[in-house]
Length: 245
Image (cartoon, rainbow, N blue to C red; front, side, top):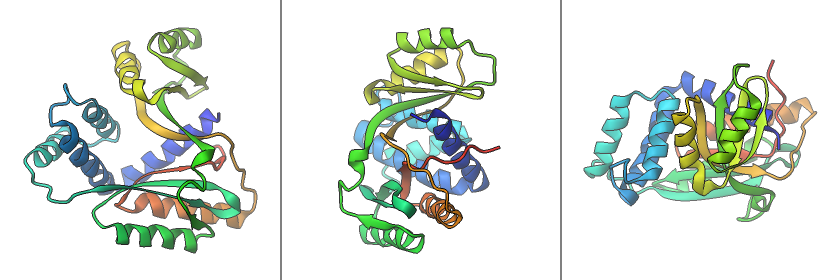
């Protein structure tokens, strides 16, 4: 598993959302609308909502915005009925891509996703064409700039139900069963760790390296346009992205 590459992906996404906060507010709002309808507006009784609130805060969404989104969803203020759609395909040079969406218009979303794949050197495939290359896992990222002791972190992670850990000079990536990601996030936070991200992710079993400059350019553009689309919640891929300097 490439922990450092995953961390770079998160950094790239965070930088993008910092530059366009309205986008992340829209995406978080859709997720909150869905989980409140499914499990209610009380985060004490809705673990998915607790995780979303933590995710929103980690992406600098103000508390008043979060409260407003929850109240709107609970009060029926959001009349849109969002449906989960998952698209699979290949980017340049066979990079496997999974696109997870929440949409109130399947035709619009499917058209946009297909357009991005076609325009940037990829092709949209049938359901199942690349998902077999991925496993659903919980992923928790801790901030680390040299102040954490690896053995201590590993002991705490194992105690709280983590399965694996990648420790490098700036981050700690923890992999766990998706069912325990919420408990792991809360347990590590209680122990004083700074949790940067906690989510259920699609982790690839193998990675693809791109060396052709045109392939790299098109893959970056494909990811940027997918992530910028309001209907797209998550994009997972097996491109071994180069480390950022």
